[in-house]
Image 1 (cartoon, rainbow, N blue to C red):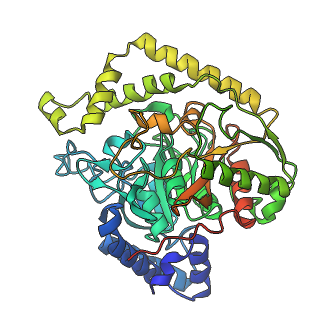
Image 2 (image 1 turned 60 degrees about the horizontal axis):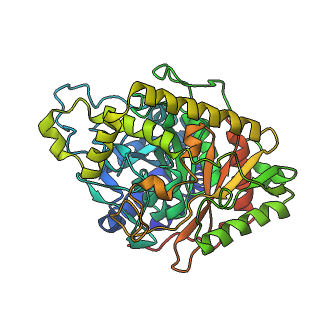
Length: 476
């Protein structure tokens, strides 16, 4: 029953409720798809086949009794291998992590988002790949190799949540948990033609705390915006282990989705196609994003072409904060262990270690100033729309596109990392394909805490057919 692997979480839950099929059948279909496609994609660190089928059987019994455990009971979910998932090691893409940890309790804890999903009956199918410690915008690592794009295995899946994006796109599970410190759910979401949301910082609790501090967010990677809203209703539950978690009040992120395209009527939309000409956007990408914006206007949104206050690229402030985080990640390693690290990671760690405390605080000041400016911007605009990426997926195994003259991944991700600095909710929605058949994404950004605005606008785009033509790839 491999066709079950192509259903959304919402469709699976409806099937369980009507007894058209069971969680065990759906889980087997997803695991089969993963086993057939992963030799090409390399999306998984490992599959948890035995435990997943046991969880699915328990879910099936709950559904038989008419007593599902929660909102996602029986839905297959994968987890990026930076987040704790009890029952095995979290390897973080690094040869420096010892999977035979001396502490027997080391692998017995769930991250908060994983714990909430488990409480709601999710079936955990496996751990997805990440670059080493999630440090860059593509997914390859010395430990697990290169993760490739389901639409073209010669191209990158993006990163750092590339394994999750490739898995969802290929039908190896409708839901995945990713992390985003500079675009890490949105970059691969755009490249692989799926939906991905970086929530407002603190909305989804995180533990252990990220070495990248308050740049790092946890978010859903899904087939569509409705599934992401469902997932947000689960993973935003409070957790005492995250001292920086923001608003802990219950929220219904699915509220208003049933209004469909009506949710966009009257929305004040700022469209910035290139950040004031500062970003060179591929023509096919620019055209597809503009068509998506025109669709918003046709739905009743009040669209104005206007740029956010980003005339000065905040990349240096981001580098100071991000590279300092990389340096902190590897600081505990003995000198001989440094040789196990990816060369690019060593380079940015050395750069990060050279920053002073004053450099770091200056970057924090720049970040706060940008946050204030974006807060002012959103007094007049409910939504900012940009391309998610200025390019489509490029050669797999490379940090930057060939011939670009760039040295670091931040050179080709100018639309994503600014909104990690400002902690705003931002999502990518598939909106077309380029001449090579590679997906294109449009990015929706709202004011802090306005995650619901992003989800409703994204869902309206799905309802309006913006994603038509970005069909899942055929693999295996």
